[in-house]
Amino acid sequence: MAEVDLAKWRVPLSDVSVSEEMISAAESVLRSGWWSMGPRVAEFESAFADYVGARHALAVANGTAALHLALLAVGCGPGDEVVVPSLNFVAAANTIVRTGATPVFCDIRGKLDLNLDPSDLEAALGPATKAVVVLHYGGFACELESVLDLAEQRGIAVIEDAAHAPGSRWRGRACGTIGAIGCFSFFANKNLAVGEGGMLVTDSDGLAEKLRLLRSHGMTTLTWDRHRGHASEYDVLLHGFNYRLDEVRAAMGLVSLGGLDEANAGRRRVAERYRNSLHGERGLEMAFAERLGEPSSSHHLAVALLPESVSRNSVRATLADRGVQTSVHYPPIHGFTAYRGLGPRPLPQTDDVAPRLLSLPLFGHMTDDQVQLVIESIVEALSIGR
Ligand SMILES: *Cc1c(COP(=O)(O)O)cnc(C)c1O
Image (cartoon, rainbow, N blue to C red; front, top):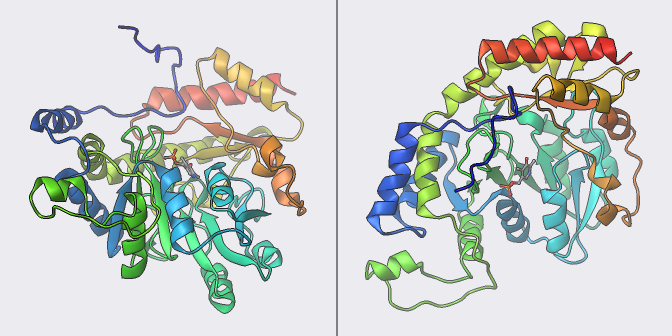
């Protein structure tokens, strides 16, 4: 069997932690013989709902499916506009398009706060705006007060893309539970990882029911209900999908959830070291510098802003030579080929910041030596690069 070569990087960008508990949780589901959505998923949903403090949690196949269903559940469709920051992963924009609605990109606040700018959100709203998808970039809660006010005044739904933010809080409330619907991702490089998976959370009984139907073909019962003899017939109430999560991943998710706070605390310590050693070093700045090390953030990403005088590619090449993997979160969506046709709005802060972004390795179990290697390699790369 071919093994994937993960040893190439001395410090990978992210890393999963594989515990014996995780392996035996997955194994026991395999041995049980029931693999599709059933009791483990229900257990994961209820543990997640408790963790974030939401009335309902619905597990789905991935975070993109969560966004798609959230948009449909609040009624997005042809003729509608949905505002979303361009400095973002492409999933929200793609799913907006797939509902038939049109994404309208808004700007970020600036180089140290990469979340959406509420005043530019206001400028982006129009008579066709149906929803706004806010991102909690890197796990740093978006300032939602004026977003919620605007949404209420104009009758617009707030959907939270909380893919980065399991464990993050805004004014004491869990990210994902503040808008109408919160969407989480459990992709392998996220804080709570199962490989592929996601979760929807909402306090609305009506939205939860709609999401539940949309998740599984619009059908009124699950295979699991019929297996247990709780149902033998079903009706189809709307045109849904198969966006279900399976039992193996739910069992992995339960174990991941149990270790989430500790893993986030590990990320926080690394982020704090990056801030202390790198913020202000040779013209480099750390995004969200003031909030690096705060427990209200899940610290999904540690993002540096390179000085304008250095080439990002050469810094990345130097780091790669030292065995340090980096990435860019994100190339702005409005620059992608598939999105160039949209009526452009000026996004000066996004355009200014995007070429300078560099994501550094960050995961809960990074060793002190790994953190030190990243810091020294960056300082070295910055002195070579000028
Ligand atoms: C990962 C991610 C998604 C998509 O989640 P998947 O589980 O990979 O489908 C959506 N939005 C953001 C901001 C993400 O980081």
